[in-house]
Image (cartoon, rainbow, N blue to C red):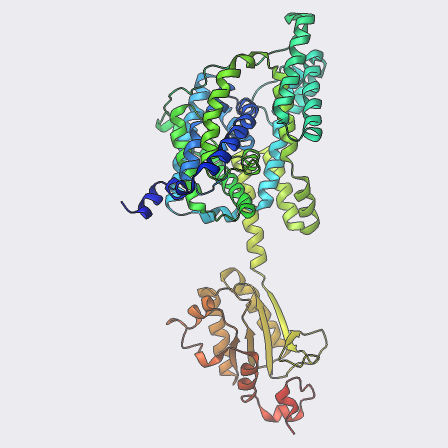
Length: 584
């Protein structure tokens, strides 16, 4: 088998050749950091997903290895993430009681279906679809997800029994009605955890703040329980974790189950791919690596398919762990593989200690996670830069709070595409005149009231001329003809016109025929190859002879000037072209 085929089947064969003693040393160090970072995150995210805490660690073992071996990024680390965990909880809690055996089985089946969808998209080379999900949608969704995380953990932070599966506002109303039932010592432990986590993040940046906060909360909970007794303190503990190795599992593939999981699987698939590819690209900008979006789809799909047989719930790329992996000096994806191995060793040592972690501490850590999800910088930038984008952000945020999360994601995508279509359907159309202040043949946009050639209209189209924009351009040309009926000739500056589809070519063909019938013509300057292939193709070649396309403005003006009516030129006062000024 050739190296090319081997690299296609196993991308790890491409980077394995660069593994040496130095890179192995760097990957070992980065892998150890990754295992330490994912330990509290895995437990917290599994709790957020409505699963027993060990399932967050399972998602950080086998899926990480598979994604590293079959992905294209050298620094992306996959595993449990906050956004995916929240979507899993919000969608699966409607089908089964969180934490129950049926719930776990459904989530594992969801992981398998998500993996199949992602793998199919990768094999179909649909990686480009991620580009249609705007950053604004992701920012709005993650901000909404942060609010939902807070709402989901209010019961654990305050020790109040609230109905499970309620919406954001239902949860807030239920808590307001039962605020008097708050457990003071539970709140104290949560507050200590929260305060220590904030302090550690700010003043101890070299230490994993989640672990520092978890230890502080555990000590506070243990001390209060010993001092007051279990009954008086009322502090619920997480409980000891089982063995480190994930249990073998199998998805339930009945028709009813698949039908119930379809909506959630699509939402998780899209969100997971957006997370993974976005994170891989952001780190690639710093590392100088080229990312293959289709290969990332395949890697993420395989990781979820294989993970579903090892008790893993849906996973994706993690920004925190990927960033830590890069900053720790990782050289190859072997660092991610080693992080999974180190995690097994660490869990074997600390699994019994999880019995002393208060649930209120886990809620406090998730509050910290939620705060980190809100991208205040980009929210402010979007609000200042564009009212349309700000509207998409607010709509996505509110939809995340009010609707099912898969619907919120799809709504945000739809709004982004509608905004994009609205913008592209109205390309900028600028009337151009020569710049008299320039010694070169340069043109600028004509100002209101400024003289122009009475026989030649010069128009610059800035944007693609496709079916959505054809009516806008046609309306503009009609208005120009009404104002200046003697301008029988039209020169289009087409360097900014990216492409022309059949509808756009049809519009230009009708315009060319109309002007030719009136004794004028339609001409192009700077026509791009993509647009020229359509206009000069067999379907429209008769309307657009190649001699009507010019490489330079000087050639275009010179050729068109020879076709102008000299009787009109004799009485013209504008004289805006060099050729005009040479006439008697």
